[in-house]
Length: 316
Image (cartoon, rainbow, N blue to C red):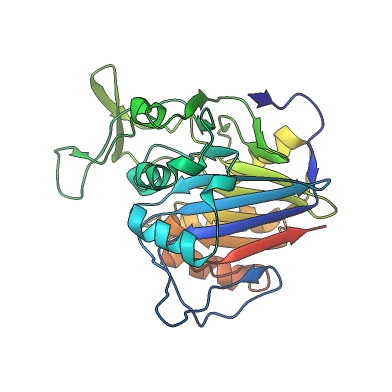
């Protein structure tokens, strides 16, 4: 495990493929950093309530790749990997943002399908409590509803080496997991209906081990990539700035978990992200329609509407 102990490595090029997301639109136009998948005869992109990424960095001619989250339906995500022409066997590492089923449920199927192309001992990075059972309280119910559990032994049975991180950690050249995200904003709170099992008891889930990714693109600034940002996307960006020492934000991309948030929370989040002056903001997955609209209205030149299968390229 290569923890961050010195200067953050700059990447010459970063490519992020959104393997799946809640929304697909083949007619959505491209921007300067996007390449959309266009439907062809017999081929299409699968969309779902899930999120998965394939990441690739280039540093001094050296290429590194990994997967970050795996979506909900392995058949759908494997379809998307195939139509996008990607090779899971190129991954030097596998990573997970947090222990919710819409981010890990596709993992075992994807990994089993590619087992003969994955080197034994390849690391699978997780944060604290990623293997704990999780529950939610549905509206109008006082009975906890089980929402899944990823098991360490299932990953190890596939020949992977599970690595738990709590500090910022480089997992591919120039690609860093955030480490445990500090909470500083007064308004970014985890909803009380999300629960976790600890020591046989159900408790409110504070997502203490949630991980995001950050990269320093040469000449551009930081790209911050979240899964769901249960810790708060403003807290997540602040964490990346603090750890890296880089203040300039080039892009913020990922799930922002503002679905069903109160208007004042959405407004404060949008204002604080806008104040950071990112060149791009790309809300995905759990951000919610109202929050996406709010970002688009407040930051029309910076906000990009994501679609499943989109390739993002950030380069010096």
